[in-house]
Image (cartoon, rainbow, N blue to C red):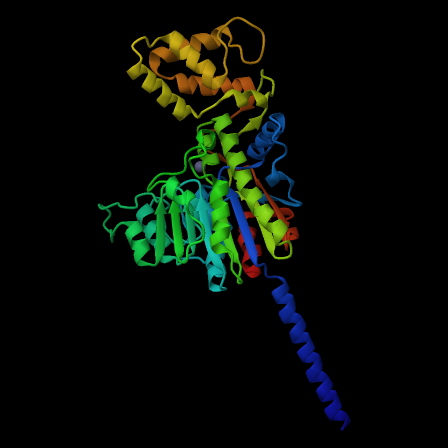
Length: 449
Ligand SMILES: [Zn+2]
């Protein structure tokens, strides 16, 4: 009899243990997970945008003030300096691979991404980017290809992913008819797979929740307009994030990846004003997620990271003072200004250096008259602009002048090996602390799905 009591107690203990363990496992799950990736965004990009934002009265950056922070090593399997493909694969799938690889390991074997784990666990999955949706970073979450430039094949991976929501820029090579693997226009194939396809900001503005999987892109094969050139008639990354929440919220929760993809491009081109405006637009998108987290505090995790640094950006330049607020004078991107000059040259019969100087003052705030102060041009700078008037390099010279005016240095036209910062808030956010590998992000997140 005593023996049977002990047996019963033992069974009870086992049951209690199992119950506790199952609950502990469940406790590790998070219903709503946001992963924000700033492409080419490390500490310099975050801090230049932060100080600029403070200087113009916009206040601190949300992304920099999340409670938990981890220095994050970005090296890839074959290089100290990663590219976006290997970094995306590391962040999404948890495995270091070679530069150029999308969702495959060093032996080109397909890996499993956190987004795929989320989908399998019954969550809805959303992928948003300000560049095209089959570009390296977003592709790392659904694609499995040995090369990042296999855009058409990555487009096929996208429509076959069964993920619930894709939005932002378009799909590169969506109708690459010359591709030997061409099976049809990616958008048509998406419709066949049950996606509602919405193209153009005027149509996206009218969108709310749709009853099917959704692809919503600003332009068919092009990225979003630059943040510095953004107008209210276009869709911002923040608006896409809000649309994502509307379409993904459900009782099983969601995983959403949002990429600020053009921070990197302006890093490559060493364009300061453009770069920090991209970071601010990215920060606005993160704020949308933080507002959602406030309404669902016990069920939401928000993680913000970068894939690598781009440009060797520095807060300080020898011989110049750090005056970030001067960049507020720049009203449009270099590309937009080049287009303005071109149009003026074609349409204005009185086109001259004086006309160009007036445009420069209007769009960059640079002053050609004599005077003391930050935006007055030196004789050398005026000569440089005159040279640019003759050789067509005005936007390039203006870029250099603005960097000097603001005191921002750049050491590279490529990526660097500087670690990035991962910041996080919400459920389980404390795992993002100390010094981590970019692969840890995936390995932390997968069990939470
Ligand atoms: Zn890059």
